[in-house]
Figure 1: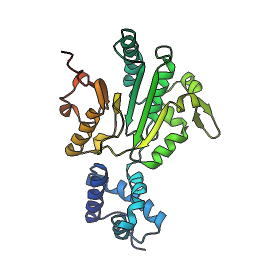
Figure 2: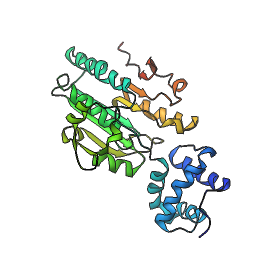
Figure 3: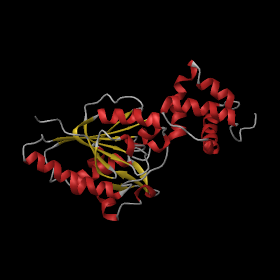
Figure 4: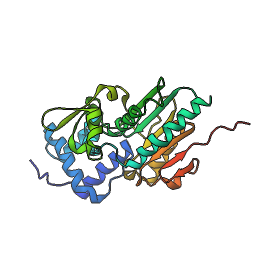
Length: 280
């Protein structure tokens, strides 16, 4: 076999362009070693001779079925529950009481929809679900829907399985872990059905509109840092279209979106609201 230590700059450019076209993610040349390592796994899995042979297959009609596994290998990253705790404090202590008040005042129905965009292996939407479960008195009898979407099929499979290592719980105290998980062998924890059943998962590419009814609250965090401005603009357009009037967008601290959200009303550094319809 040929030397598979690392992509050449020319090979990297080919894969870089392919990844960008399919996912909107723009990988810089500084990531060449990381990308090489991840692509090499696919070479070994398919017994390809070298990077060039794999690229030819991937970009051919015969390679269509390989696309999902390739993007999985490139994009899958580890995350954890309750990442950026202040966002979940807002959800539990401000937004959920706001919903309850609006229902009590006759300003909304007893239903709410959440979308965790680019949810990876499920930690974010399940964290949202835990907050709602812990505030069940406020939303008793409500129709609550939580959707998690991701480009990676393997990440979605892991999310549906609902089994996590202890390091994914680094931001959770022991009481919360006991409430929502059952411990299995070898430091693995299984999410209890009471929370798991609150979340549905779906494959979705952020560069395309989501074919779903609009949402009251959308979370997009720790993913758009990898997108260039053109791709970010497409994603923002789709997110805003998927928000109900008055709905909230929760963004991560490093997304680089702040000057692209002028159509929304900034509430905090991480929170943006879609203007409500003119009542006049």
